[in-house]
Length: 329
Ligand code: TRP
Image (cartoon, rainbow, N blue to C red):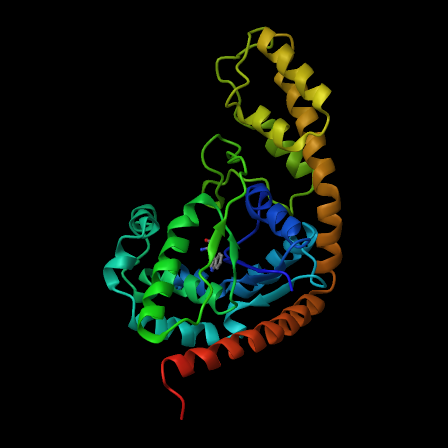
C-alpha cells in the first residue's frame, strides 16, 4: 500500500494560475506515487467567510471541475468534501482538549490574516482554531505527507506538536504528518503584486482565449521601457517569469530575452507569444474542465462517493481515538 497524501483547498472562488503551479500540478504528479486524498475544505472557508456562505457549494463544484481539468483523477484519488465527513469535527473537538490557546495565537498566519482582512471580524473561535481543524483533516487519514505552500509550514508544525501532546496523554494513535514542499516558483499577479483574487490580477483556469490575450496585453512589464528600442530588464519581470513557467519553446524564450535586453523587440510581440503559450497550456485543462462541468450532477456524485470512502477511513481512526481517550461505552 502506498503512503497517504492529504491536501485540501478552500472553496472561495475561481481558481487561477497560482493554484495550478502552486498546488494542482503537484496534486496531479503525486497520484503516481501515493494514495491521495484531496478535499474541499468548506468548513475552513467559513472560518473567515462565515457571514456570506451562499457561494461555497457552487465554488466547490467549480473548483473540483478545475482539479479534474488539471489532471486530478477521481478514479485514482479520493476526492471528497470536508463537511460530508463529520468525524473531522469530532476529532477537532477532542484535539481542542489538549491544545493550549497560545499555540494557536502564535501561528504566524493568525495575526497576519487579522491584519490583512481588517474589515472582517476574526475574533471568532473558528478562525483561531483554523490550524487545529487542519490538523484533524490530516491526521484522521493517517497521512504521511501534506503537499502545501510555504505559508502552511507553521500549520504542519503545529499539527506535529499537537499530535505529540495527544500521544503523551493517551498513547500513540496518529502518524505525524510532514509538509511536502515542492519548489514552485511564486507566480506574481498581472500587476506584479502577489497573485490574488482580491487584487483582480489573476488569470483564471476558466478564462477563455480572448480573456487571456486581453489580460496579458495589460500585464505589468519593465516600466522604463517606454519605447521598443530601450533595453529592458528580464530578471523579475513578470512577463518573462510567465514565459519561463509556461512557454515550452525554450529557443523562442531565449531569443525574446536576448532581444529584450538589447531593445530589439516590442512588448506587443513578447506578450502575444506569451498569450499563445498560456492558451496552449490551458487548452486541455479547459476541455476537461468543460466536459466535467457539462455534468455537474456527476461531480456531486463523485464527491458523495469519495466522501463515503473517506468517511470509512475516518470512522476507523475515530474508533481508535475513542478507545485511546477511554470513551468507550
Ligand atoms: N489551509 C489550507 C490552505 O489555505 C487549506 C487546508 C485546509 C488544508 N485543510 C487542509 C491543506 C489540510 C492541507 C491539508 O491552503
